[in-house]
Amino acid sequence: MNTIPNGNAEQKFQELMAKLTATPEWTEKQQIELEMARDISVEMLHVAEAMRDGSVDLESCLVMLKYAKVLDFVMTALAARRDIKPQTLRVIFKLAGLHVDEAYPD
Image 1 (tube, rainbow, N blue to C red):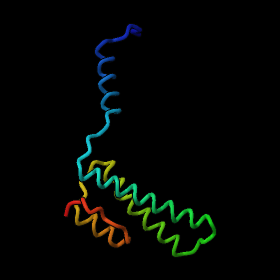
Image 2: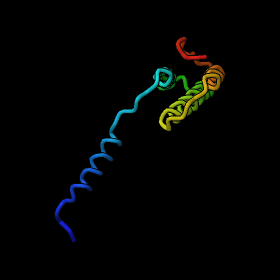
Image 3: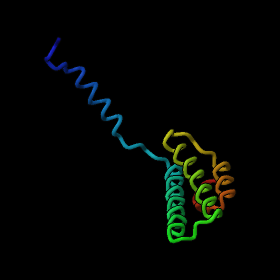
Image 4: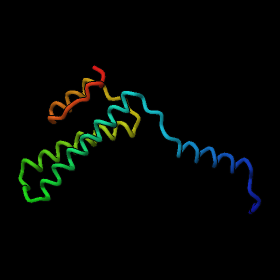
């Protein structure tokens, strides 16, 4: 077994680590989508705090589920680097009763 480090293997490992730890370049559209996802998480926090304070009802649970589904869709698409069509996102946000950022493309 060879115990002397191979310079080529070390270089490949360093390149792999650099690739894995590199921050992705986000487009302006993706930045807006990420900001809208953050807004959803803030709304979810407000609903969760209201539920914690004792007003747990079916409506609150359904609102939380609705927000969670939209947040999951946006974050999954961003993580997979898939492009979300603006019309699709607008319809999803409208159905969930969420606000679409004014700067988001049509």
